[in-house]
Each structure stands twice: as structure tokens, then as C-alpha cells.
Image (cartoon, rainbow, N blue to C red; front, side):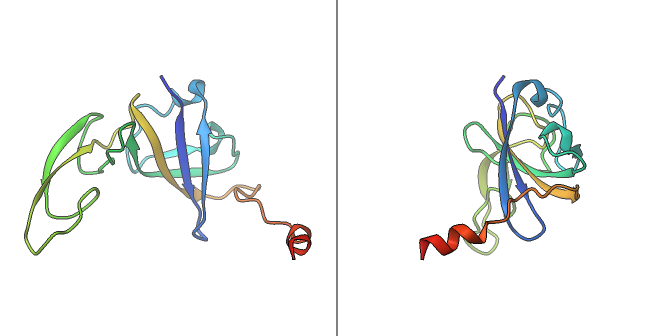
Length: 132
């Protein structure tokens, strides 16, 4: 089993990418879109994260309305993984289910509860002055 990449979206619009080791990745398997996870898994104590989506190793996106861990072909008008081509036109697309499994490569989360330490490091002003 490989490690997961977790993309954390903060409230100010910035994203941070963390990698979860194989030992901690086992606790994420079976979680679904909409579930919350503790920040201790990622190494951020005091935080809680809400799972918003993800993709598998081949790049197929996870959809919250498809149950289960595997891939499925859906006939859809709009939503995750669908580009609208015209009014009422439906497309058959392959997407992943809403459950995290061993072939999931990336998990997208957003911050639900903020901890004490900041996720994004603030840039130091001394470095910017030297570049000028």
C-alpha cells in the first residue's frame, strides 16, 4: 500500500500538500467524502479536517454520489469530472466512488477546526528585501 498525498485547503484560499506515511494511511482507508479526520494523522495536532474529494492513482476523480471504493461509469449532465458540452447533453465518464481505498492517490480536505500552530508558514520580510 502506498502513502496518500493530502491537499489541505485553508479558509484564506491557500493550499498545502502533506504526505501521509503508510502506517497512518491505514486509518484513512474506509473513510468517505464528508467524514472528518483528526489532524494527528497528518502531524497537525489540534486540527480537524473535512474530506471533500480526491482522485485515484490514474487521476479519476472521486464523486460523493457514487457509493463504494471502485471505479464506475456514470451518465451525467454536470458535476465532478464532467465538462458541460451543451444544454441537456449527457456524457458517460469514469469516476471513483466516495470511499478512500488502497488505490487512492490524493485526498482533498478542508479545515473544519483550527489548531494552535499555523499550517502555512508566513514569508519572512528579510528575504524579500535582499532580492530587491
